[in-house]
Image (cartoon, rainbow, N blue to C red):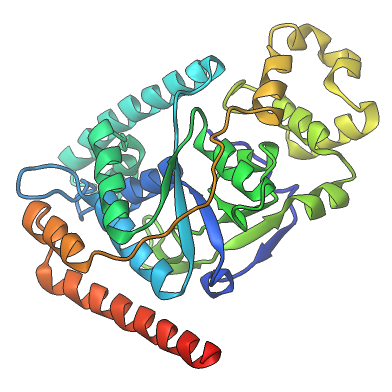
Length: 341
């Protein structure tokens, strides 16, 4: 579902170039789901290799990380661990959405409505264990570090910004702010031109950055109160939220009463929600403690062999992208040598 804080946050447009030389902790599952959803054929089905295995996620990771590394960005991918038990209702809700979308996709295809079919197909993406292993293997070949979180990946990504290990956390989900991410960057892994559904036109998706301290100051609330606002609206741990309470109303309520326990009109509903546990998940999450984040060298031949020999990628396209990356890194290295020389 994702927490709806869009109208409350202080969002500033930015660009990928502004993250040069900075470490960005990426919510891996969030990024891979984007690739699985967006990178598809004309019929809406994901890309596959010669054996029928899905490659959309690999394609997204390959081209996006070539771009990141070419710009001097230092990405770190954080993978989800075991979700909190309170997330089970949201997980089941997502499964049902995928089932419904699959039925609608098949109907649309049978009726020749391919644009509509593609829209439904994007809602059917499933991230399987083998896809996670595919992703980690490619990241290893790129020399890009990845971290296994004990629970929510975005919690550990946020923690990396709190401890100063990363400049920002990258995710589409505003939950990262409740987890305490000092800076959240959205549209980081999916920026660029995107075709609008059912329209023969494209839009430019631009990255945007949200500074938590600036947002809290603008709203006049604490992070603890922001968590309570999130609970009122609805989080992954209480998907339904509170009836007829949107972001602006939730903000008004918390600013007036201070905390959930003091809002008399919601006490009956509040008794049905384990709100104290939800607060604990956001304010004291299970995170991976990380020492020094080490980046390796790109194994150009290893990447080429994996993509072209094992996953049916075009050798020409892979080599063009890797040559561009190699030239960019060599240029940066040469410039550094001149600077320090």
